[in-house]
Length: 75
Image 1 (tube, one colour):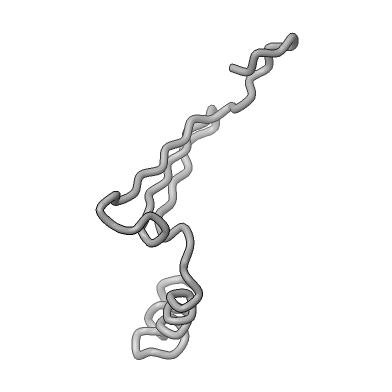
Image 2 (spheres, rainbow, N blue to C red; image 1 turned 180 degrees about the horizontal axis):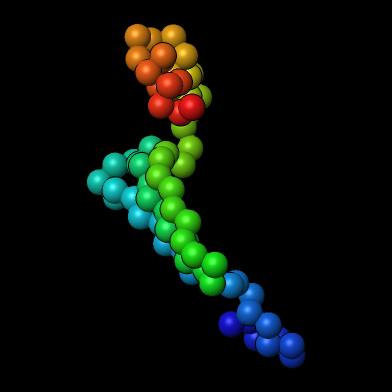
């Protein structure tokens, strides 16, 4: 709770982020969970790609043999 005269909650949710600490911090996949009075939100993925990794990822999802399957799954 925020310490202010109005005593309103600063955050109305609770969140957690987990990563594999055995890998480099910026490349480690992460799992995110957030709880609030309305429900649960969650996600997973890589927080930030390097430029070369981002380009490789883009090629994999647009031009390799599995690109069509990836597009179908996303739709």
